[in-house]
Each structure stands twice: as structure tokens, then as C-alpha cells.
Length: 146
Image 1 (tube, rainbow, N blue to C red):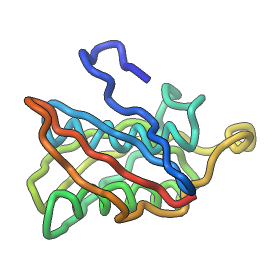
Image 2: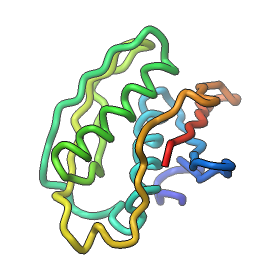
Image 3: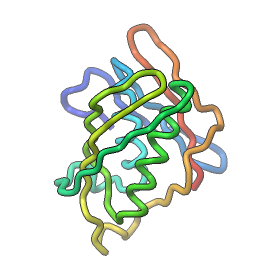
Image 4: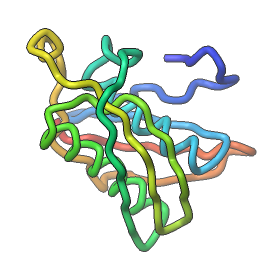
């Protein structure tokens, strides 16, 4: 999927034998984390990516490395999704460093119609999780347990 304002593909699905994964890209660490979150939610709800968002949550995560921070960020979004029965859609990272992130997450309340034909992601795995530089871009591969 390509967003209209991006000059690169922000995320794409990658093949995995038993689970599902994405490769996310960003011009900054912040845009990488946003695109990884959008990619994960697109795997679950591909038809609701552009829906309006009403609910707002403040998300804070801490970790020892940027790889771990990415996993914790995505796991926290999954938690918000499951606990509040919302679909996180818009991600505004207020501050980010290698081991700390604070973001505003806006979500759409889930309806019965949205629950049809969706995938379930149980967890963000450690398998192959990494953030690398590719020229001026940050690139991450993330595998999700389904």
C-alpha cells in the first residue's frame, strides 16, 4: 500500500511460513514507528485504514533498545485495540528516542460490521525483529503471531 504523500512504500506484507509479517520504512525513526503501526493495523482491518478516529489515548513505552521499543510500541497498540475495542488509526509520535516513546493514538470504535473478514494478531514476535538503515531510510521487519 502506498500513501499519497510518501515517495516510498511505507509498509508491505512479507511472507512467513506460519505467521504474518510486514516490512516498514520511514525517513525518520518516528515515521518508521508510525508506518509499522499502520501496517500492523492494515493487516487486521485493511478496509478501515482511512476511517475517522474519535477516541484518543496517550501511549508511553520504554525499552533498552530501539528494536525492543518498536516491539513494545506495537504490543501497546494491540493492547489498546483489544482492551478498549477500538481500531487504532492515527498515530502522532510526540517524542521518541532509542529507548522511550510518547504518542497520541486516535482510534475508531469497533462495530459489528468491522469485525467481519478481519485477521487476528495475537502478539508481536521477536523473530527476526530488527531496525536497519538502508541509505537514508529506516527499515524494520516485524513478524506477528496469528
